Length: 213
Image 1 (cartoon, rainbow, N blue to C red):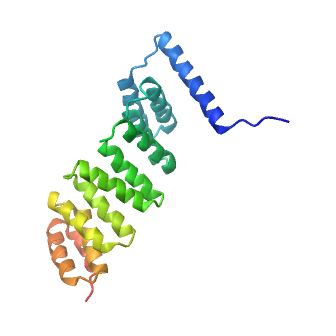
Image 2 (cartoon, one colour):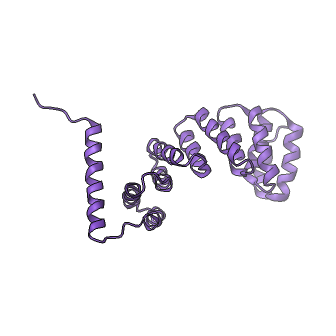
């Protein structure tokens, strides 16, 4: 009877092969500098050379498995490829290596949201806000996540906080107006629309058509 090879064994063998290849490169004097590997991975990602970006991130992980940055950039590459499950794993490894890695938490919440894991995304975003309370984009995203779940009342507070930090955040104000409309709070919606008209007349014009009579 033919034996089946488990996925764990395949992954382990692949891991050992790559580790051996990295050791050979190091022995031969081929560049194994971690910072340079991260720089190359970012460049490859920017050039949409995603296979090379992934390979380079994996090489960096072999060099310094305890470092968070390679996992973070690996997650970014997976996200750009729409491979959100893989991105979630990479971001979680980054956060595991660096507990206060707010940028990774922010990206992790987005990946979870794309997978429909809204509550998990909300919890991660709250954790990021606890660490960095003046991060406007995190408050905005928390509001949008509540909006996605249909919790419009809960969305108002984070969006207003985002605007308190960054008054010219047009996206946050547009969503705030839309949620006030959904909550049938006409006075609040009109007040925010007047403010938006000064910041972005084009965005205000588009939203004015949604305003109730």
